[in-house]
Length: 144
Image (cartoon, rainbow, N blue to C red):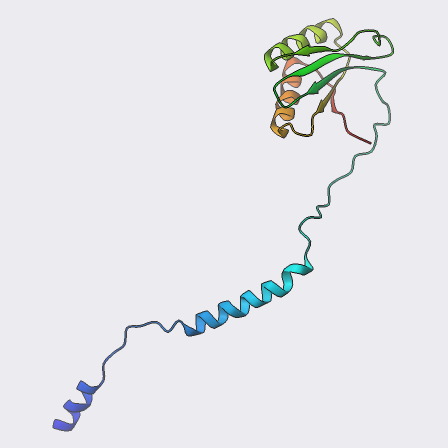
């Protein structure tokens, strides 16, 4: 019996986690990602293309948004080419002028152009506000 008691005392349970295999796996994954990452070019994004409108409007309300909350609004087209665009200091003044132009010319569509430094959210808000006013045709001006 003394032999069996001695055998039990000599064994102790280890409550440790062996992390060496986990480190090996992580190093292998790191090497795989380092080798595979130059194969993918995240800088190239496939953007959808938009064709030119088949029937461009002859006259429209032009809104040009600028980053400092300033904007210009005016009528463009064959009938109203002599009218110069008005500068607006705030978005509220721009919306009031847009309402007035829509009441005066209810069938004229709106063309919105934004500066390259403007937040995209401001363009979306302007589209939404134009739709709330009741303007049916709202378009975005793009470079060609």
